[in-house]
Length: 173
Image (tube, rainbow, N blue to C red; front, side, top):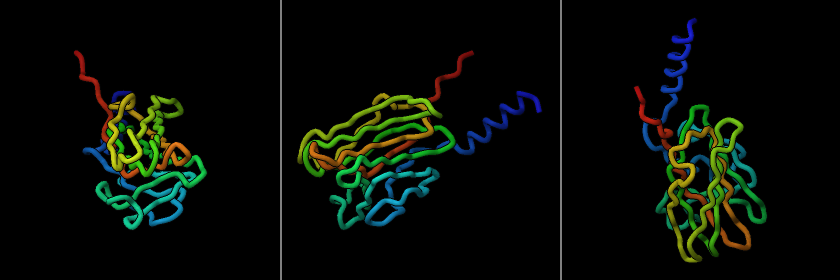
């Protein structure tokens, strides 16, 4: 097979996996309690460590979806969102339960860190807040790792992560 056809076949394969529009990951598969170590949602693989799921009975006012995910008390929980085809972070919805909790967000392409962001709720009574992507906006990544804070600085829970296709630079002639 020539390089031209190989490239075209890879482009078709990548296009078949491309995101057709924004996707909202809302942690909707699991029920209340310890988050499962892995599950699939909207074509993405979700992997967790030391994380808890709160369902509608426990998760805020439900305006951003029925479930939220947070670090287990006293642990440094992590949530990874993975997919073979590149994607980009658009935003994340964060709930401040007390204090001014933060969330660290890292995007990777293969083994390389593309960018790291830190978002902090503006105050103890903030409730739900949406953080737009900063350094990761439009960046092609295949793994997004989130570290939701649950410690003396505050309690916070992740309600939704919005993903889309990465930015494509315009073609030049």
